[in-house]
Amino acid sequence: MIGKLILVATPIGNLLDISARAIETLKIADFIAAEDTRVTVRLLNYFDIKKPLISYFEHNKNSKGKYIIDRILKGETCALVSDAGMPAISDPGEDLVRECYKKNIEVSIVPGACAFVSALVISGLPTGRFTFEGFLSVNKKNRFSHLESLKNEPRTMIFYEAPHKLLRTLKDFYKFFGNRKISIVHEITKIHEGVLLTTLKEASRIYGNKVIKGEFVLVLEGYKNDKSLAQEVNLETAVKMAQPLLKEGCAISDAAKQISKITGFRKSDIYKGLLKG
Image 1 (tube, rainbow, N blue to C red):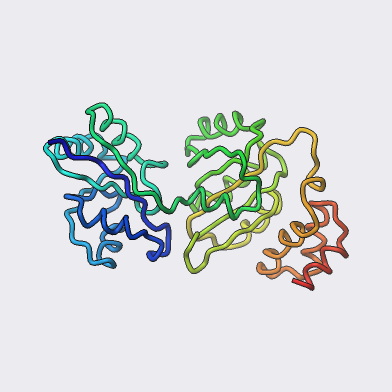
Image 2 (cartoon, helix red, strand yellow; image 1 turned 120 degrees about the vertical axis):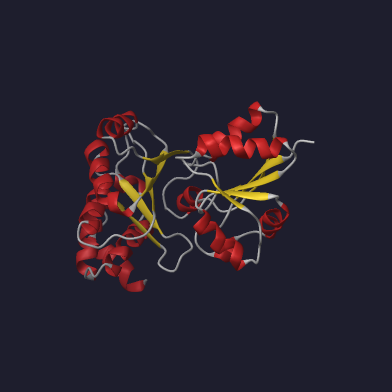
């Protein structure tokens, strides 16, 4: 009898976000395939789960993928997890799922946390239509080709980015997309979780003067052909855009002035909104 592959979502920060079904699945699986066993073992230890772990990541996916498939074909159940969130999104779990279908192996899922979906819904940008773009290539030619292809993309765009590449990416965004709105979401569900809804120009200024740590999801406004920023943002949103600037140490008057230039609302109205908030 052939076993099966189960994709199990794990917390993206707070371990208590794991579901009861995910815990039960990890307990009954014959073995667990993990992106980084050192990360996964901390999760397993926290919930007192004792199961064999197999390392499965980008650089060993061919050899370990075959090994996992062979064990499943012999009747074992494999739980696949990533370091955080949903496996098979921007990781080699995608390849393992595809290989399972080629071998007529059942694939099921235990849904749960997903970083890009979580970032989208708290971004303050349109959520009705969006496109997930993952990580940009470190190869300059491929990176610029990717960005060029998105210049007229009308949907909200979502990217993952590492802290050491954040400033470069913000500058590249500004180069290709102009001064669009962006929501910079970092450390979701963790102690230092934060959301900064601003513009690309202002984001480059802010992150050009601070130490950057943590994992980031960038939610970028899609292309608009006939609407100005001021037409799309109401006063309440303008005040919310100014609030993160206060946390960065900006004076209320200066924050109101900056957002006034971006949105077209009067500085005095934004100033009053900040005082009320």
